[in-house]
Length: 93
Image (cartoon, rainbow, N blue to C red; front, top):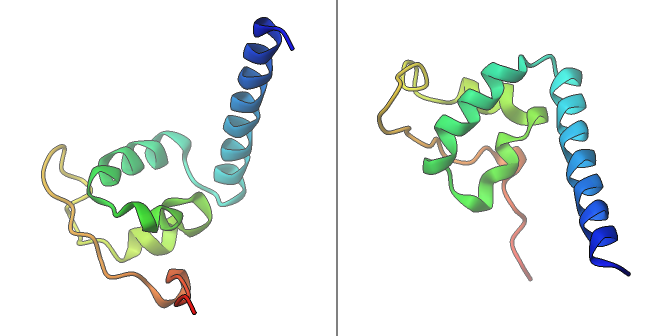
């Protein structure tokens, strides 16, 4: 497979991912700009093993558990709430 074809395939996969996320946000009635701004604000403080909570499907529930007022600030710490039982990983073993 040529390098050009590999680049095109990767670009198409990236485009497909963007379109899926856009459709997901639309499906869950989220304003795209607001959702992205809030996710960008929260991600530096959010544990990587809990990124699923930031998905459009779960964002409304996750947002409701955040400390009121922190999200509206341009800068500053975001307090990460405890994981909800619905999103906790099952124990191994």
